[in-house]
Length: 135
Image (cartoon, rainbow, N blue to C red; front, side, top):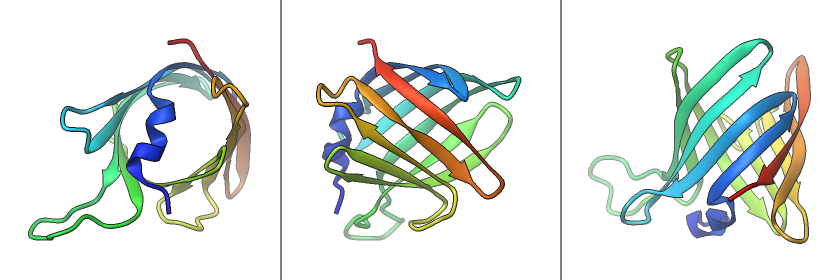
């Protein structure tokens, strides 16, 4: 099972190329319970900006957080998109909505951990994406 700390290798700024171009930056929120991604991309003629908060969901009144690493993206156009993160060795899978969804991103880190190459897939479409760590 993926833990939030497994995603520490994402921390930093990455340039994105392929079906989307721009930058994404990951940083820990104070306390280390959440990873925050800032997104600034161009995709399909649109400028996509927003933030994603990644962590273990802990509902009001719960004593323990849930096992899955989940997230919610908040976009400038009002989108709120939910994801589930899985990291198995060097393969990162981000499921759209729920684990096992037909909408997902699957990518592999190179040996140095500075390039993440993969593909976003959803019913009716897909695109390749390469992320290169710049800091």
